[in-house]
Image (tube, rainbow, N blue to C red):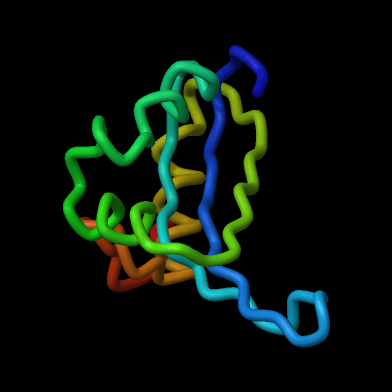
Amino acid sequence: MPDTSGVYAYAELSGLHGLAITQTWMYVGKARSLSARLARHQVHLEKNRLLRDWLHRPGERQLYYAEVELDMLDQVERDLISQLQPRCNRMRYAQHSL
């Protein structure tokens, strides 16, 4: 994981015959340092109860990330939460903000 600013998203995958056929967005976050932030998403360190419970359960997961300039982090995170409606985010944006 790069030590740069960006956004990231966890997805839960369901599969058939070894291939992912659906994904459910579970969490979207932002960070000034992706590598440092993602290191804190370990079950024993996670403070978000919904995300901690999901990370603790067995299952197929996928982590996506994109490098984003610091001045755009908040906007990109809001856009992604608004569009993806991840299940474990405490804060969801009802409508897309421009």
